[in-house]
Image (tube, rainbow, N blue to C red; front, side, top):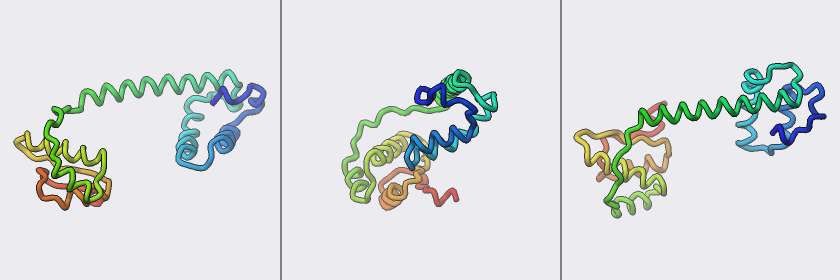
Length: 158
């Protein structure tokens, strides 16, 4: 972003100018909304002056990117410590896959369901299958052949 802004545009540059820049350069949509939702926090944490210079604004962006790299690395390590990886599914369960597809459960959701079913077949206890995708929940719920303790959807958590 700072590469798009010119040093001469930083005379009395304020938070409002940053918002205008985003509004001007990103058409309506999810990406613009995501950027706008994070601007105030970025400004409050990384921009240390009321009217930043081009150089100090550029440095604020670099500091933010550096912190994001540290955060991502930390989250990756946390994930690796907590995740339980399973063996790859060998059986294709073609009949179950056809049933899922006929009930509007499509890729990759159908493979996720079959992976979970296969995992449960190899355990002494059954886990719940949880999805917030309505079509997936409806489809899985209609098939009695799956090995799940419960099939839960978003309505179970409201």
